[in-house]
Length: 615
Image (tube, rainbow, N blue to C red):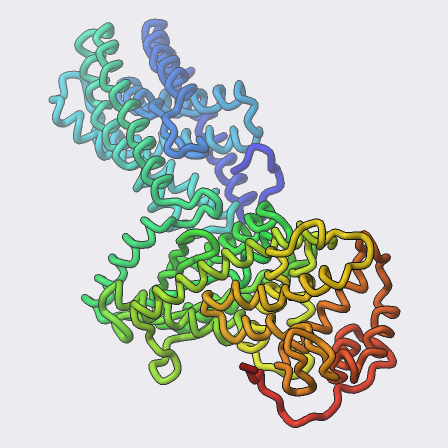
């Protein structure tokens, strides 16, 4: 329970009321019993020693996690020893006081402090049940005292932990059994050790009170053990945790996948593997900056972590994630679809939405070895990304073709070359007279126009890439020419007109066909007056015609050193004027529809046109 929050759920308020009622009655009864029996000052003094030791022990509990929200108190040893030496009433009073006072001094939330104190008092009473049957009198054999301590200690621990876990479960709306298991898993060894220290404290006290000082050694050892165990757990978790998202990292993924496949092969129960990629994550980073990209990854990690006990989520690196799911592929697919829906409702800065693509396969159905299963899942993810992104592909051998190692290497090399080319585009935009985002703006508009004219998802993706790379050749044009504020000379014009061919040459070796050809012809005009080859009409690749319109619209609406920016209406008027001469009328009409122009002319009906290439 949080010290700052004082509004509790109804069930928790009911539990608190019950604990207050029982504990209040117990403490009052125990105090009355002590007063009634009129103990000697010597007995009161001895009991006070155990109260002081329990109080000091509870001031410095041993943490069980790095936040300090869970800890184990060594006061347990002295509360239980006091019960065996002086009676149940002393342990109830000592237990309630030694917990309450340190929390009051620490300014803990009052309800929480009183609840924890009450739990200790109740646990002290429950643990005294064996004494009602057989009280360990002086002279009792140490082994008998140890047996008594084990039974009493078990009752105390179970009562204490159960009540605290029940309160946490009500507060966090989590599973009581899971909390109980987690607490005993982390603190069980410490409690077991303390149980054996209780009879040692009793025996030492009865032999000679001063010998109780010898208990300091085992208590310090226990404290060091718990601290060391905590440090080891933290180190292991950090070694297996991604620092940004809090999910498991690549090492944790490898260990979990190997264990999951081994279980699946042994039991024949399905386990599914899912690879997820953030679509166009580099564009997100380039457009909005890495802090926004990191925020997107954190958001996705949080959504994936809510998959339940059957799902383990990992970040493999960059924008790549993985899920290991106990169950068939449809379980993983349902989780990914839920994440896609939630991402669609959570735009990042700039109203940018994150989309993800996923590939899924399962063992033992699709593979029995980790490497084979990863290859199948990777092929499924590749299919999803190549067919429009924001998709899920569960492996089907009739649909997804497994790529050879050579093909995967070639694709990786091609992707690396493309990333290098896209990085060069940033240099081009910085050299030119635009605001620095011209290529990205043209690429975005190309996607919209390609969809308006009815191209399929795979073609739209290629057109997007062409829009991003269309000015690559300008990297070889002198800066002074790109930024010249006055009209170009004839020689300068010819040099500038060479940039489509230069871009084609730079892209020719990147294995990005037909994108290189589209870039080559993106300044051809519908009437044949363009360059570099004077193509006309449908001789010009459709993608090149889309590039020309998008490039022209962004140029007209962008402020430059030698030209003021026009509004969308004025820019459309210029493009309409050039439709049929400079521009393809179909693409201009698509632009009008995309911009929602009220006077837009419907996209002309034309025989279906594919993205044909021109040699």
